[in-house]
Image (cartoon, rainbow, N blue to C red; front, side):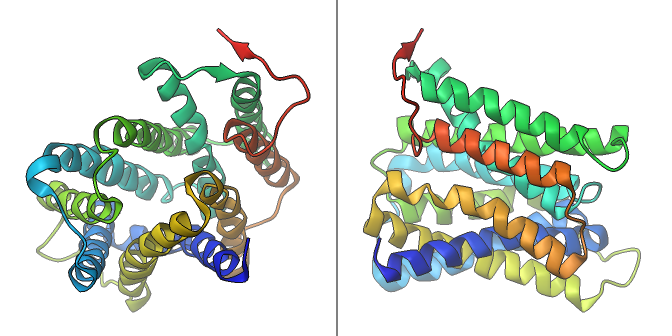
Length: 294
């Protein structure tokens, strides 16, 4: 990996990891729906400008149905689920739980397109489940029912991401990647519009909340996707997914450094086990014994 690609990967992981920090700041004041609305509008605008400046195709007439599905199930719904969850759990926990997206992708691919479950994938799924159990079970005090529901919402968001990745591979394989992201962001903004409070908020909103929404849209969505396209071009899609393993590290770092979230043994152990499971499921780590299951 050359220095430029390494810098892009670290920057991308830092931006996506920071998204949990910004949601944690903004959602309590604006609500999850308003944060998702602002994020997708700003992110979609950045990506639309990028597409216009580079002359990339949109292919809306051909792929608009797929864009609509990804916009609702791959962007609006998981963003809202995570945004709602971080009102109850901290950014570090949400970032670690959302590292399980590749696990759900493997499960959906096995069910939908009969993608074979290798020994590594099965081991990765099992390890990730164990890591989640450690994360939610090994805490200074038992998690409340509300916190467990919030953790389940994060996992539901990952299930949406898993479905979306397989759906994209099946129905949007030939669609321009930049067009998928721009269109899905704008579809998500349209889908969230009826649920967004436009007439004002009950309490004054601090400037930090508004700035967090802008950062989420401009940097964590628009700029991040542009970096991701460039990373795929430089490394290929298989090696580019290594960024998945860095996102929780930055998510925990930002939460600890800027929000004062604690570093507990259960959080460290759970994160390590989940990331090990993801590495196996993604094929980044191989077991000595390799054969196909089922």
